[in-house]
Image 1 (spheres, rainbow, N blue to C red):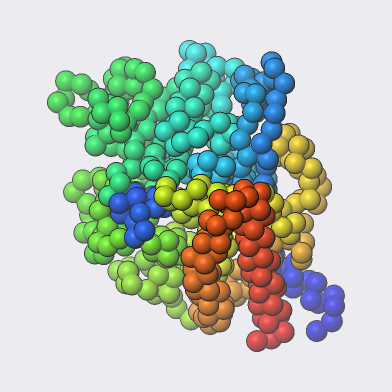
Image 2: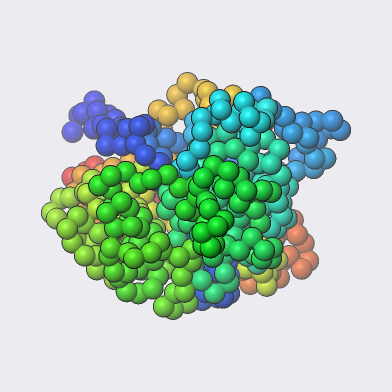
Length: 517
């Protein structure tokens, strides 16, 4: 093949994602949260898929602790300011450039935060500003970063977020955040304005979070150990005629603030969100009958203790195909016809799809030092055709191919995030995200055959990593007793080594397919 022809094919493959999934496509993030008594090893597990339309590029940065001068302020996107603290904690930052709500954070204390879009009914931004429910422009983009910079626990993260919401009000349509640490995880549901509620994930259950609100009547506002909410939440819902205290029914944030589902949608016809229905069926080990006679619960008890790979397999699943019942044992191989990609077919329960920028599964363990016990298992692009790489919270550097080569102080600025340098989204054969996205697009050209070859490679790679994990952590535990800095260097070197091996293998797979195999 001539060089020009190869270049043309490369460009077509890379930009295929734009044609298939334009910017106007609905956002479709997804999360799985496993309480520590529901996991196989006692860890809190928090898995999150970041999914947005359009041409994207995901960078992974290490941001060190930073000192701030007295009187410094945090500048918010819409003009507000917030007092800065003297020192902000270090964190790993998944930067989804150009997307307001696509960044993920994992700080030095093992606190992780990410979110799903979950629309709520409310008045317009202008109306909320006029009546004081949005102040100084409101908050949106910076909320999760402020939590990561300041929270030592998940509950503290909820309290920090709640203070921000009470002070500024949420500037856009609703969202649900997950904030987790090695002891517990919380689900924080937010409406536009100053109304919100947070519910603790039961230790022995699992939460499946799609793009709808899931906090229902189980959240008792009197149970302050497990529920935190904005002041006057029920009174506000009553004032808007979204809840009637005289009905005798318990208050439900989900029922009060969720908009009516579109006519003829799966939710309208069956009474449940398709991805929540499918994933809860996977967790329970049996299909939930449809149509549902009641909304699905906030969380469910699994049919077994869940592992990291159990969560990953949910995230790699493609749901059920229109008109068929899913075989819940087959994960990503469900019901595909020849040469059909699950990123194209009409499945109603699609969890893994081509709008995915990353999968992160946090393994958070409270019986080890945080730098070793809390780590992020991360893939780039759609996880069905990608590979897990371990990133320990104790690392102090990320290999250069895994992020754009920007000055970190510049990259942290709001204007830089939303107006990045020219060329940010151009294909770079040395950039890890671009390589993995290109591999995904190649797989999709003949998914049924190509995925088998790719998964054979990646499954072996992942098995090796899980086999290595106890030995790596044993060494790190010995090192940390004597020399914290040496332990950090060891973990940084290991995570970087696995990341670069994964990138090398991804490039080899791309070349394999490009050479006609």
